[in-house]
Length: 307
Image (cartoon, rainbow, N blue to C red; front, side):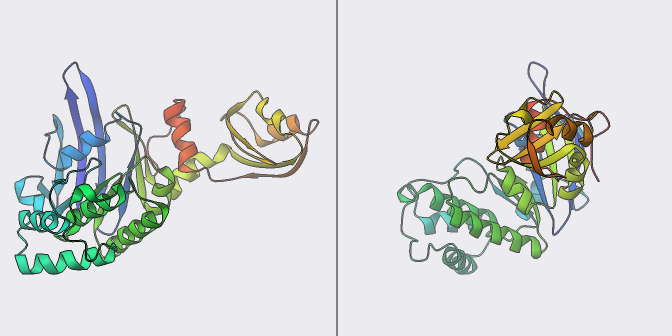
């Protein structure tokens, strides 16, 4: 459906915002785009939306270049609020529906149904400025999906939502995937990405440094991820000289060993100092992978993608 092929974008001052990124999104899949601030995620989205043009590379949608003719097939939920604060909920959504050429009668039915699903029924005359941040996000989400797009781009969709409404959003996003929508999910909430995405692409300094399915990425980094359970004080774990990362909790720790270090080296070091009740290799979380790569720059030399 959407194919991004080796796109580049450089701003003034020779700042490489996006540097040779390639990926695709197929119907019925969710691609998570992750990365720190300034990594190139927003620039990539703007090129997909045809707001910016890539300096090099191509973006195609159903085999055709992105352009004005594709905009009605794409839905976009921006991170920033893009609503008219003095307008009512009903008028706002009917206006957005008109921009997508939805007839007035159909638009009113769609608006009514989506407001019901998001527990905003009967609030059509409330002004946007009177709403909580979470309810504003609901209205903005509805505006992005009213026209039943083939591709949906969600930039920090859970912003301002309480845990209950985050679950509601997640369920609806998964429902849209089940309907065959292609979805791009941009977020800093790595736990959410881990639960909802089929594939991820991790940006750092304009490059796609890690990409692939959730399982394949985790498996690639699992070789040195260790879960340790113990009795007593676990401070000796932190003194092991070949740690790449360690998070210490009461009676257990999550540890990442340096690539040249064996599990036997680690256990042998600890046994004289503490009682170990369980030691096992585990799949690391996306958060630990993110921190390891972006926070410390520890990307393995042989690892670019995990297919």
